[in-house]
Amino acid sequence: MNDLDTESVQSAIAELKAKGYGVRRTPGPCQREASYAFVLSRPTMATTLFGPARSSVFAAWASAQEHAEQGETAASTQRLAPFYAAELPASAFDASAIAQRFGVDVESAERQVQQLRCQSIFLSETYQVNVQFLRHPFGPNLSDVAWLSIKRRDREVVRDWRELQAIKNAIVGPEHEGFELYPAESRLVDTANQFHLFVFMDAKVRMPVGFLEREVTGADAARAVGATQRELPESA
View 1 (tube, rainbow, N blue to C red):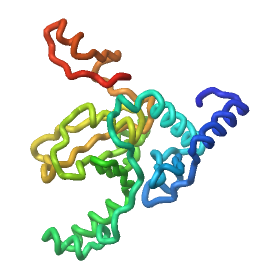
View 2 (view 1 turned 30 degrees about the horizontal axis):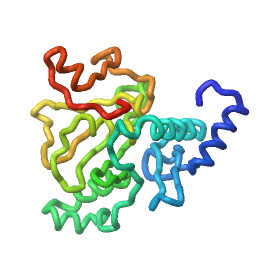
View 3 (view 1 turned 135 degrees about the vertical axis):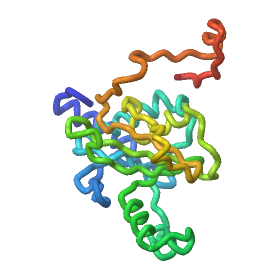
View 4 (view 1 turned 60 degrees about the vertical axis):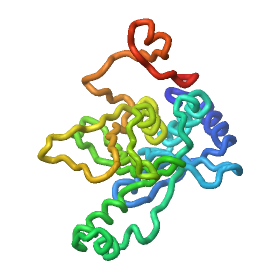
């Protein structure tokens, strides 16, 4: 939806509305007061899907367009059940109950509750993703960063790179770059089967390391050069 005239924009929005998309203000806690997100609601859906927070109505519609195109052309690439916005139960915000359950002091539990109130929760059949927005962590010249805290709902280990990539694509967007941090041992946190991705909210940001061009090959092509590769989804 970039560089379109007003008539084309209105036509694109009308098509999205016909598919069940809309845009709403997201007056949620902490850093989401002045943001907007697309919503997707259809008669066949049990709950409404909420898209990522964006800074303007137009940006939210552009995100809806990206989501619609992704659903049409890359659903088989993700191989994941859809994510839906969710809310934590009231007990998750009871600092006293948390302190008693986990054996921590109430002050520590209150800090945990405050952090939870700043997060958006997305669920699929397999995964729970808590999303928190970090304001310009790399300075004012770079974008905000979405911190994705990812865990399996059965608490088993997540270690399929393709699934983490698909989660990043579904929650933030396929053209947004992110990274996983391997920290200094002095600040290592390893307490649960939970994994963290940090994703730039500006799709134009590129990491100054990594490959410059896309190259995705299947099992046959890899075997031809002496490598081993899993089969790819049809549209990868």
